[in-house]
Length: 128
Image 1 (tube, helix red, strand yellow):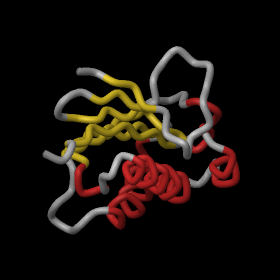
Image 2 (image 1 turned 180 degrees about the vertical axis):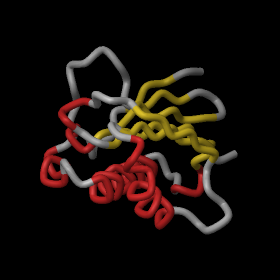
Image 3 (image 1 turned 90 degrees about the vertical axis):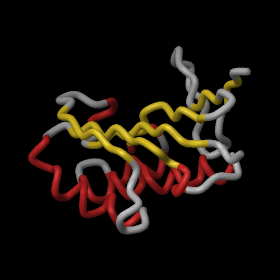
Image 4 (image 1 turned 45 degrees about the vertical axis):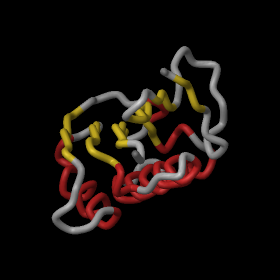
């Protein structure tokens, strides 16, 4: 069964997408950028800070679902400038156990919502 979930920690948008879609095995988190939430506005323009804010928000969403960052099996990271890879990577790695990182693809996406420099989507394994 598929269900849609609106996390309490993210303001509900009028956009035509669901923030989280859950099937019998996985939760799929829509892309999150710092511009999506009020506290994120303060970090726009700093790749490390945006990455930390986004992953902190992902952690909160997962907590609402009874999950942790350790349940993430895949992330897609979009950078407005791929030259910022090292800065994003330095912040990203601190959220996961060394050697147990999710599978990840990192691409350059020149225009991200609200002038953000980083956007992250996640596929998360549900507890069995």
